[in-house]
Length: 144
Image (cartoon, rainbow, N blue to C red; front, side, top):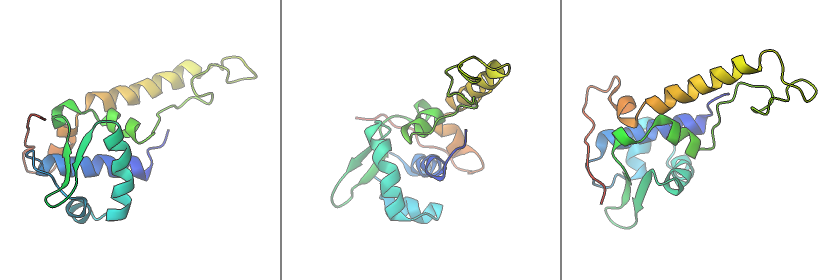
């Protein structure tokens, strides 16, 4: 039930994109510089985000990435799930076969914790993250 560096970077990079986004493309080099990340690594991070329909890319001069939806409509859970992150505190991956094929005594407790974490991330939007401690407003736009 650990959030990996990829998941953290994805949330940070998209928060940066949300703060800069006004519908214009933002290049990965600008996001990387602002976040202190490698552009090459961000290229790997953005591929699953694009596949999940969270970011849209444009090639060529003036190209880069935009959010496909409003930052308020993108949950943090959708970002980390796009990166292949899971939040499962059970020892059995939720199958209830923790102890020799039977459910252990604490299964429901750990299952509840897992759902609590997913619910928290589901309830936080990218706009919430982008606005936290930024002192700036997130520019909202309608995707074409």
